[in-house]
Length: 346
Image (cartoon, rainbow, N blue to C red; front, side, top):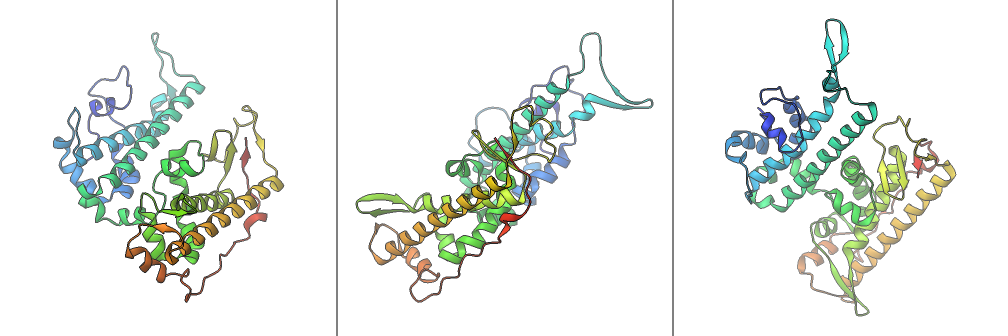
């Protein structure tokens, strides 16, 4: 079964014209199994399917399960139709591939087709962002989610959604870009953050809304230094591992290696030397933010900086490399700056 079962369900999130209620849906079940279950877990997915009739109702609601159901539908409807646009545009017949036209309706132009697909993918990514926010905001009301391995994987991340990442480093197409950056964020936490502040301190700070200390009568949020360090190192490594672009609209990972439209937009390949300078700057900034974070944590523990942290902060500090009696493991750099990369600079 699937969480979108009728054309009426899909119409709630996509404008569908000249489509009868009896028309067949795209393969929404495959979309959910590939893109939703790896996020929410099998147990919550099964419960939402079981409670489909209860959750699939119109009108305002605050019920955690009903809202999750709607955000999933919003994500899946757009993604499923985007995936099958080609088979709606072109038909497989006994005579080969044909495009359907009539006297009253012509087939879409290629640019219209691409614009529609991009819009559907954007709406799907926005739906996934809303779903992730909801899952964490209402986690206490979704026990199947918090008991899942999928929750544990997301809960390891210090930056859990695109909106949060975008606060510290501007992203273009943020929802799609963030999902492609998640594995790099995990690597950054293991490679840079934990060797400096320790795993216990990482767990202490990453789930907090803020971490305010007072330095020279000025309130400073350690969370800012913490997340700025993570995004700098993340973008730096994304530049090596992915095809990326920087522009006034922000940083993004290209959707494919085929850039046939890029010259039309006036963008050209960045030189490797300039890209190397950018990577070096991101490394420098990340290290500086990380040094600031370590300084603030040491001062907070020593009582030099006023704070209202409880004993859990002291415990996390004493178990980590920042404590005076513990050795700090140096940060390692993969020295990938010279690797050939294919990226774009707007």
